[in-house]
Image (cartoon, rainbow, N blue to C red):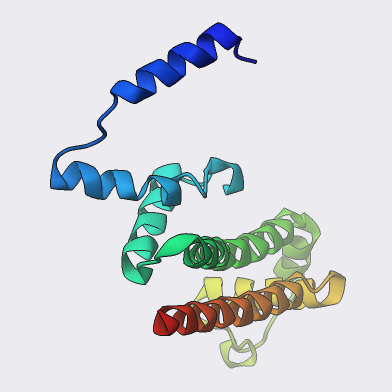
Amino acid sequence: MATIKQINANRKNALLSRGPTSKLGKLNSSKNSLKHGLTAKQLVIGENLKEFEKYRDRMIDALKPEGILEEQVVFKIIDVGFRLRRIGGIEAGIYNQEILHHEADEYKNKIAEKIEFKEEEELVQSSDKSINLKGLAFCRDSKYGSAILKLNTIEDKLMNKYYRLLDILKMMQEAR
């Protein structure tokens, strides 16, 4: 905690500040309250802070909030929007985990090698192994935990929230 002497020194120094003088400086300064509303605390390990900041700044520029109430709605839109952007990666991660689990099951390969077919036409295979593995991953997920279903439910709720917030912001902006 600051001492009384430090507080008084800070107040004295603050009186000397004249703020930004150029148009660019004033524009950048006007966004300070918006930039400080969302920080790296909301990022997940491995996410890129610069990518988040770029997304946040582009959203602020696109939505053009005025006043604290509109800023709050825009902060929430940014939060929900960034969470929505995670969905694809999470879904890929679910499939990847299921595929890796499948590949780790050596007994399945041993059994497959023992199956004999008299003619090649008896064995119908997709030429794309990735499609087969994704299908397998989906089936395993459905049987064991339905993570994809849960993820899709969360995505639907986030989408509804996102568009409700956009509607709220639009009404606020039309009212001014």
